[in-house]
Length: 144
Image (cartoon, rainbow, N blue to C red; front, top):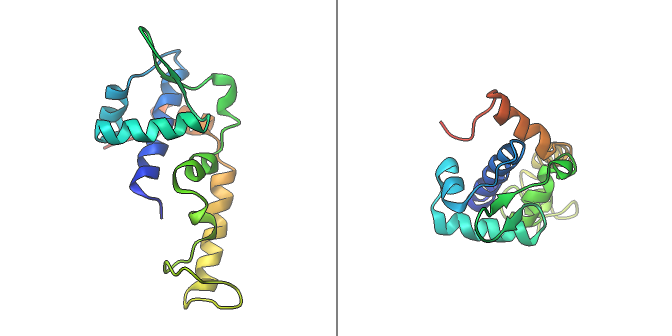
């Protein structure tokens, strides 16, 4: 459903948010280790998230990545997905066809449309704050 880039990006954003709740900035190395992702790949993902104003990058001594607490409830999971994967998850064909529509549907169009709509609803109605709170409380995890 999501690209590897998007999966790592979601994990990284949740980790940064959970650390930001404790007033901690986190560095690239710690993020990559926590989400089990190669550092260079993680750096590229963080750059995209920063350019899309989802995370903040602070340079220099004491720097790192953070998300202001007051913005966490406003950042929707759909924003992260769109920044990293575009709108493919909201509009794409279940079989990956380039031309699939109501007028010219693929064999799974109607069934996949319902799933895609439910996924879009979940992504648009889930905010970063609730995901970070799950990590902070120990109810959810970013790796096994």
